[in-house]
Image (cartoon, rainbow, N blue to C red; front, side):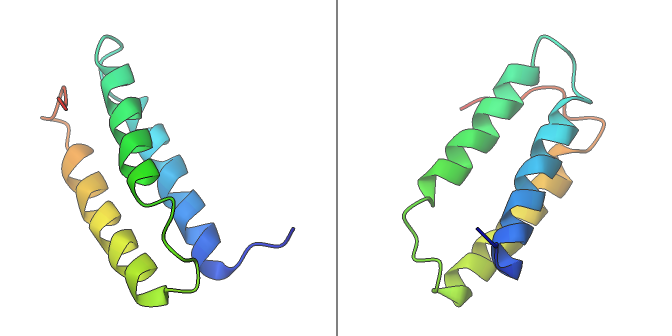
Length: 78
């Protein structure tokens, strides 16, 4: 199955989230991984042809990743 450009971007963002979680303290790493999984699962039923919604969520996700990847952020709570 070939992936569209947007699908590749979504997967890249998810991988980026998991990659950043590995930079966090080992004790809190599962919190970051769980947060990323939950955030992506919230949007799993969005129509893949709704490009505006997907692009909006990608921008939102990138901003969140930028904030949470800051070295000062040691833990995240849900």
